Length: 40
Image 1: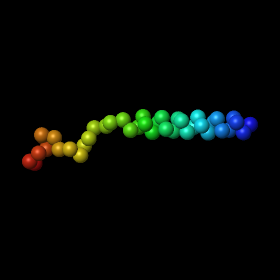
Image 2 (image 1 turned 45 degrees about the vertical axis):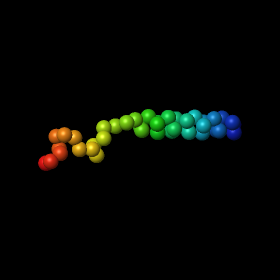
Image 3 (image 1 turned 90 degrees about the vertical axis):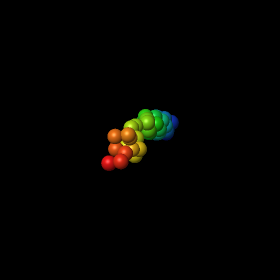
Image 4 (image 1 turned 180 degrees about the vertical axis):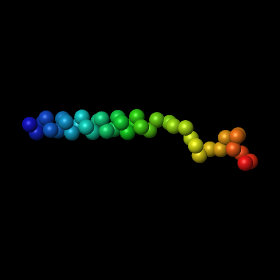
């Protein structure tokens, strides 16, 4: 029973790490000013 609990914890940990990496995909960068907003 203890092994089953440890494996479930490991699965949850791996899933959490995978979701963290998936959410860190490069998004649009809104901090940089494009040519449309310069000088306004």
